[in-house]
Image (cartoon, rainbow, N blue to C red; front, top):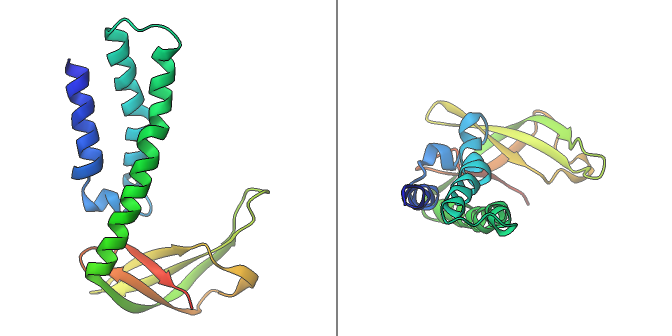
Length: 160
């Protein structure tokens, strides 16, 4: 019973109580907190629940492993929707500058990326983009960034 209540609490935290600083983190340890919950904590708790119910067959492993997809995919869509709504309600536009340009490291995944920086109230934020086809953006190029006045970590580059 304790694992069931803990799982319910963790899922409620994940979907409804995640602080903005974690939800909109683009780098650092905080960015990985939701992934750790989805990949490690939820499957572990499900396994303990099923083990307590004496389900020791393949199903006892399949459900916890499948939970990564059952929780991860909806969480990804949900957070994308939250970020979009936040930008619609609290969006502002500012100028930024490209500070890094690089190519993806996987051989089968040669997308071009750039990192932009922008300032809000004297604090510098970073935003990332995946659309740098034909090396359109170079370091020190000007960009236009849409960000949330409520939380500038939630931002995106506005492409023509």
